[in-house]
Length: 407
Image 1: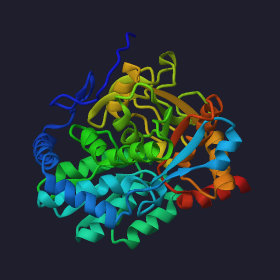
Image 2: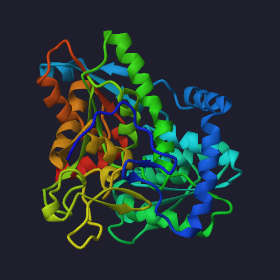
Image 3: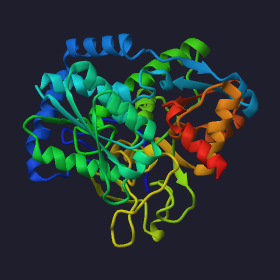
C-alpha cells in the first residue's frame, strides 16, 4: 500500500476521510442527520457557542486537566520522561464529559428535549446523564446487559442522575448492540429526540463532531508539554476503542511529523477472531480487520469470512467494539499513526503498575496504554518525553479487577 505524508486530517463535505467515513443509514435518518450537520456547522463557526462551551468545561467540568510528570513510572521505564494527561480528573471521571457537554449544547440549540445515548464502559452514559441533569433534559441510556454486569457501579450512577438505563439483551450484549438499539430509537422518535453518540464513529457528522469536542485534550497537552519541557513530545499514546480520546489527543499534533501517534487496541485473550477487539491486527486470512460498513460509517471492521460482524472480547467494556472510527482508519492507511495492541493481561499489569508507582488507578481502557508506553519510553533517551492519555479513572473497574484476582 502506498503511503502519503499528510499535514491535516479533515473530511470532505460528505464526511469522508479518503474512502472512510461517510453516511450509510436508512432513509428515515437522512433528514435528521442533515439537520444535525447544518446546526453543527453553524455552531462550529459561532464564537458564542465555543465561549459558552469553554466556560462550562472550565467551571463545571474542571478543565484544563493537568499534565502530570510520572517520575516513578519514568524511572521504572529507564528512558524518556512519561507524562500522563489526567482526563481521569475531569468531572464524571473521564474525557467523555467534553463531548457530552458539547452535544448537549447542540441539542439545546435544536430544541430537542429527549436525549438518547449508548454506552459501553458506562462513562459516556454517566457523562450524558450528568449534562442532561444539568440542563433538565430527559435521558435514556442503552447499555448491553453484559456491560451492565461488568459496570454495575456506573449503571447506579446513571440512575442516580435521573437517567433511564435500558438493558440490551441482543447479540453479544455489549457496545455494538447498544448502538443498534439507540439507532432504532432515533428512527422512531426523530421529531423530539437527539442522539448523543459517544465516540468518533457512526454516520457523518458524528466522527467529525466528536473529534472537534475532544480536541481540547490535545490543545491543552500541546501547551502543557511545551511549557514543561520546551519541546514537543516524541510520542503520544492512547487506547483506542471507537477512538474519541485518542483522536482528541492526536489531532492537534497531526501536522508535527516528529511526533509519533500511537493507538493501542484491545488484544484480548488470544489472536483468534472473537477473542479480541484489535481491528488492525487480525490477518485478513482469518476473516477480520477488513474494510466494511458498520453502524453508518465505513472503516476497518472485524468480520468473518462471509462478511458477518464478528464477536469481540476485551477485559474493558469501552474497547469491546468491532469497528474503529473512520479518521483512525485514514490515519492508519496514510501511515501518519501507528496502531498496536495490548492483551487483557497487559492491561491488568498496567492497571496495577500505575496504581503502585504513581498512586493513580486508571480505567481498564486507559490501562491498555501503560505497558506499551513503558516499552516505548525505554527505547528513547531521557531527554525525550512521551504523553499517555489517561482517559478515565478506574473506580468503575476496581470490583471487576478484585474478582479477577480472587479467581
